[in-house]
Length: 274
Image (tube, rainbow, N blue to C red; front, side, top):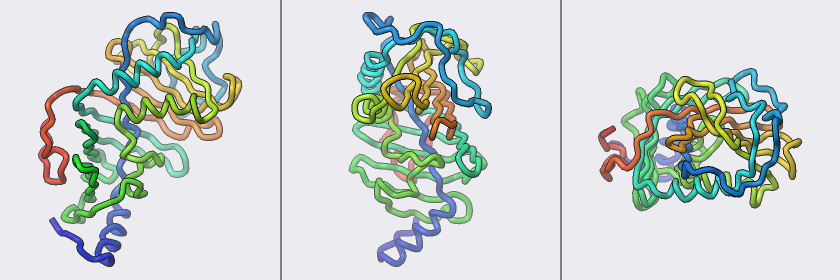
């Protein structure tokens, strides 16, 4: 491992890293109780899920679904997300804004706030970023520059995914909290299907569909959509929109929780254990 001790060398290392390192986030996995939405407020009956275009990424068929207020549902997500001591899952994200990019990777998390992100697909394969127990972040690119290791600030652009979301906010609790913030502070409204709807993928065949809209009603622009497995209550897909148009689409699979990840997983040299 090469250490960079001067500001000049640190800048050169970061510049090289920028050419090869793009760590995908879109890593949300949201857990919640599988109990019924008792006492929730009905928002729409037999109402179409959105008027936004979805031609580039399919959506669960929620056109004729009944929706209820998502606030209690999100609150349960937040509590359940915090119940995991550690977890790992695989993801694939397609970014549609600007040049189309497809990223694939693995995400690891362990309390209190340790994270590891690995690019495993053809796009910038081999790039790794880790955040240890002290909050210090180290990263390295793949390929010919894989011998390099640099320290990065949490706000570094090099730690943002292709759709611009920061790695440090990609754990389950942070993403569930983001949904809550959308409706409490960002002038958005959210709803979730009262019952499951047909999924766009083979597993699971049925999902809950959560939607977030800009404004005070559901006639505004769509902002987020999340498809959630009713058995595990983990998200299996996530859609992001900008100005009502699809900007990115993420898929999660092979989630494994409370598996006993070792601390050395959250180092650059850490071996993959899952």
